[in-house]
Length: 288
Length: 288
DNA sequence: ACCTACTAATGCGAAAACAGCATTATTTAT
DNA sequence: ATAAATAATGCTGTTTTCGCATTAGTAGGT
Picture 1 (cartoon, rainbow over the protein chains, first blue to last red):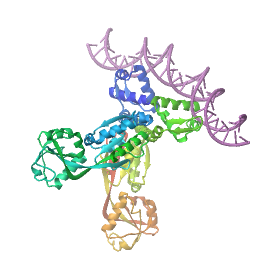
Picture 2: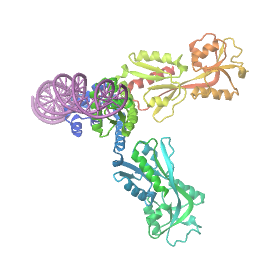
Picture 3: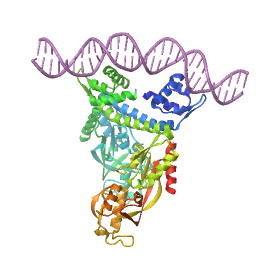
Picture 4: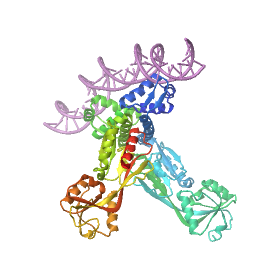
């Protein structure tokens, strides 16, 4: 039984037509016909009911279609990951990160990476939801930066650093470090508080701790956009201090008591030495 | 890439010796050598480091060994299940059951089965722990009888019937339906109350409801054994009424208020029509 | 230093499997 | 009746695979 045969089967199970399928998978109709026969023969399972005119999945065929689709995907994912391990320092690693480190930590880190592992290719993605856990365990990502610690028996998660969160206001705003009164009357530009991200829940708790029901006029998850709107005087916001490095014009940062952490997480028992090296470098960068 | 090649790889990854492996998998050493080469070639991943004397897994090889072992198992399980669907009424289905239905419901049910589906082969197992859920979803069993309802989005679970639980005492014992005083002084022969099975937790709650701290002298999960010990006057027990059908000598059953249910569970979206038929028959038997 | 035992790779010829063309056989539509 | 559609099959040349015998590199013993 060949993986290829299974893939042929899956296409045929969708198409239910030998000629079209043969064309799609770049073999002749006769060859396809025989491959499927060989598969049925070897498994001793009838996969399709066919007369001279129609092709139809049997129940066993439907079952295999469903489960093989899933397994073949997992299979391919595993092979991709093995290839990464094999390629090592000349391979690719995938990193997910929260937007808030895009201005300070991440650029520094990427610079160090490119100095130390010049042939390594990096895939960066900013996930919209916070399911780093699944992404790591599925091998869809190799290293996850996140604002909260990932608690999972198969994942290691270390704190890299903490930083204050800040009120972000336009220059010469009436609010400053010594005078934070009347916050409840300000208009806020922040990410949707109903979201499940760690930062959103931190914001919720900060507002409730300070007895504020914020008037949110604009919702945005993109820090750059938020700073821009603040600079235009459309409202004020709350962001981690890192954003200050973006050096947005006409914006001031007022540090608050509250702190936010950055964690780095990876699969326990990681076999890819390059990934281990990358983690080490990230921790070096954070220490400085 | 052949499933067979992967299986060769997995054996070699354990043995780390081409000759021994070749013998184990019934091909020649040269053939094995070339199969592994072909696999490495196709994947473009080096699996083993070998000199003329030693064979050793690479990191990528270790990774694939771990993950392929798991996937290949799942693969085989899926094929077995597909075969069951294909074979239908002449195939095999797997049933798990609690010991307590072995005397009344199960024999009746099996009789009906053998009348209606004479060619069907049945695999019966009595699981020691209560993880019917996993067994069903892994395709290790097709139908699970259990004392509690299985709550899982991918499993259907229906109540078949309820029956009282009973005090089981030797004939002519001082206890009877009208006089249940002094239970706290009796010696009990019951299954370990620390266990996580549904019946054990039901017993725990019954004892605590009746303010009894039972003196347990013997623990046994096997109902037949328990009745035997009771008949010899070694103590009394509590069992579902079903056990009365075992017609153990010198034993009497005293019905209590408490009831216990029997559920039948199967995978939602089951494609095997024979399994569906079997479930139907089970429900018929229970109704009577 | 030399011999021996061990073990993975490889050359080779026979056998098996596979690919694709052309054809067949059956069904459906006109 | 005829034509179009479509899965299976006969056939032939090509590729792959198999196992035997051999080679080549390594470790250990003397």
